[in-house]
Amino acid sequence: MSHSKNLWVIRPEPNFINRLGDFLTSGMVAIGWPDVGNLGGGLNREELADRLTKTYEHYLSDRKSDLAVAAGVLDRFVNQIHEGDIILVPDNDDVYLAKVRGPYEYHSELSDNTADGGYPHWHRVEYLNDAEPICKIKDLPLGVRRSIDCRLTVFSIHSAAQAMWDFLQQNNHVRTPDNHKSLSV
Image 1 (cartoon, rainbow, N blue to C red):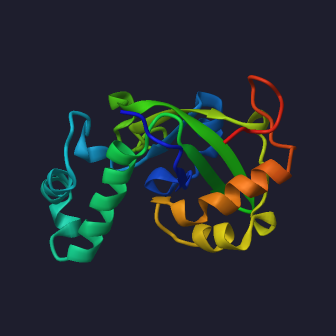
Image 2 (cartoon, rainbow, N blue to C red; image 1 turned 180 degrees about the vertical axis):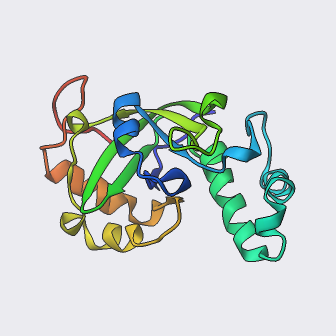
C-alpha cells in the first residue's frame, strides 16, 4: 500500500530530556513511554491504551483524557507514520527537517528510565539540509507556526502541509544528501 507524504511534528524530548543530538547523529526520531515494551505487531489504538493502562496504572488510572492523548501519540508514531513522510523537529527557535526511511523499531537497550535511556520507540529518518536547521520557527508560514505551538509529542499538521511544501519550494536552501538541491515533495 502506498502512502502519500504526510507532514508530522515530533518533539526531540522523549521522557522530558532533549535528545536532538542523538536524533541527528543516529538518524532517527524517537518517543518515550519506555515501560510499555515493543509496540510492533499491529496493535491498534485501543490495545495501545490497554498497554498504557496496565503499565502506567499509578499515573493514568484517574486521568482518562491523559490516557487518550498518550494512546493517540503512540498510535500516530507506531501506526500512522510511514516511510516517505516528512517530519519537522522543532528545537528551541530552530526547525529541522527529516524524511522517514523506515518502519517503527523498538530498541530494548534504550527502554530503561536512566539518563542514557527512555526512548526505545524509533523511526529511522534522513535529516535534510545537511542536518542543519532549515530555518527559525518565526520564519515558517503562519499556519505551520501555529500548528507547531501544539504541545503534543507527535502530531500531524496535514492541514498546513501545502503551505509547508510551498515554503520549501520557495526557499531553495534546503538540501538533500542525494542531490544537494531543494527538497522535492
